[in-house]
Length: 336
Image (tube, rainbow, N blue to C red):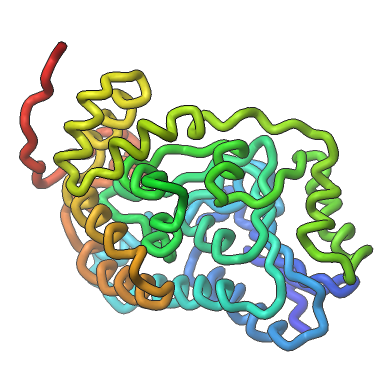
């Protein structure tokens, strides 16, 4: 059995439960190539072991995983190191596919931030536990990239037009929203999270769903804010084109619609076009086909000016004022 006791990934088996901890708290567990490869190797070694389940968690409370180490990917692009970029994304997507087809139940404990690659680690497994501190998002259009890690598969399969809304705007979900959309499957309060692994070990013959439901106890989850605007989400983001989406948001004129429209206007026009097309096709593709399409896109998009600028503004200089290379033409806003 693999037993990694130090480094950015901690892994071992205890009482019949495989346990993998992300241990890069200073970087909010942003995934490096080595981290991805290590997790993949551990899961491969455990695949035929007599385990009741595998638990994925973080050693810290600020983040489960804030995504891939996209700042390093930008450095690879600037250095012209296409091989390093390919190695990261190919390894990450291989891990996503492994989790999706894994024969042992995978339980992800989402406490704090879970964005981009963090959703890739969690959503492809059968069980995603969220706490009251959970924040989920796919914010890639804001950095000149696109929702990847199989997002072109799982976002189109969310209720109605919710996936298109989340993919284009990068809107953040809390625990109630995550449970409403299905990105989260169970709620467990943060103070009880450490008990999950032992509870699963104590009841290896009980369904994972039953064990997790017991842990939720009577802790209430607030009403989903996303559910409250679901009709408007479907009405606007169910449109066939980006232009129609914007027009419908303008017509709605609500506070939610104005926030969504501002998010679209702030995002990379290139990323919006790519994301809209990718998600529109995703519903008819298998996960493998989606991952293959995403990998092909990474080879070109990570070298574009919008990606380099978006990551600079968000993660390097942190001025949050990207200047996109090109702008999509759209009609002026109408005013009531």
